[in-house]
Length: 119
Length: 321
Image (cartoon, rainbow over all chains, first blue to last red; front, side, top):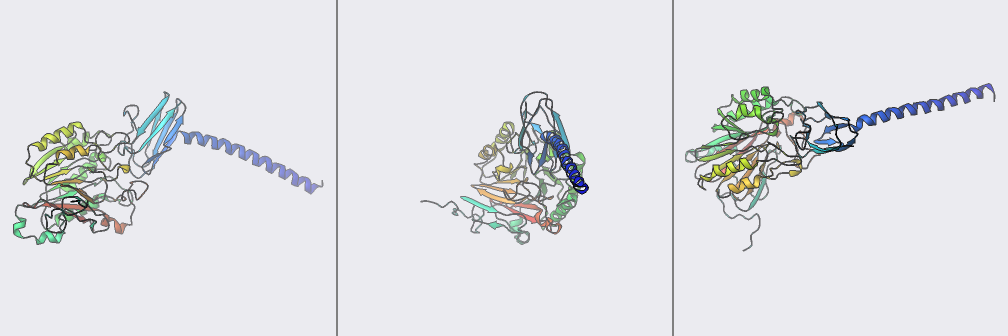
């Protein structure tokens, strides 16, 4: 192996290691993003997305209204949790401290229904 | 004898259309014309035709205008100026050849039930020639406080969640509330207490009394998939069955639509704020974003007149442009 070849090999090794490190860190970032995404519900186009999420006990679920019409987040029993009217880009959070299935809806547009499953 | 579903059985207005049988007439806001599919029971006069009515026909005539869904506080595309379009609606009303005696507002007065939103609408409507305004709430008017602010401002003479009735020149008007206590997955709802009140309210009336019922969400099934209907409206309509002439005026769907079933004529009014898509013609019933030049052609007011001696009410939709 001449000097030139050694240099090339070293560069290739470095590149591979570099790629591996980058991949690993992006994997970590993706994982973190997934955790956030899992507890975030987007309101848009007259629907909750995702329509069903499963979270661990103690998780705070965040809703954000990206629609151009106000919506609310209200548990079906109307007592467990109830947001104020959320205008565009308004947010609402609720921490689920007990296991169970929580069905909820928009009290302005009751056809909009979804659920949070707490395990 | 077998009858076709849309056969004309009696022609009240000598215009080739009739109240009986199942007739359907739809007028989409924005097209600017009524699309009469199988005749229509409503004698719809154009504004110019109303001016042509003979003095005899004019005598004893009651005319009023319906406005709806002003959504004061909404400021997004396609209409960042809902106050401006409401003012345009008032101008249109003030320009009618026969000044309406009063206004009906069929709800969604405000966008978020804020006191300043209600205040703005009241202020703008004070500019109308007709001084009396009769309101019913839309779901946007009761959001956040279960209708407390609405009732304090508009519901002083009403019962329950805001329902009431009154009489004008022999016509009985009933304002109903179908936006309270909505259940998950459900439609508009009147509730047992209001239904009982309605039954008693109309009991004393003779069957020949023309009845006008107004409420925000349609009292007929326009498109339940989008919540455009009222779950217990059939019960309300059952109490009105014996009447010769029943007109139901609604808002909520931001477009005009008519249907006639038996002696009942259903009509929804356009919004003064923003248009919504035709049922099922979009992913969701969100505001339609239309070019600014087209907006006022999709907004409007409804002028209603009642001619004594004729059973039908004349309903005319006008666009804001």
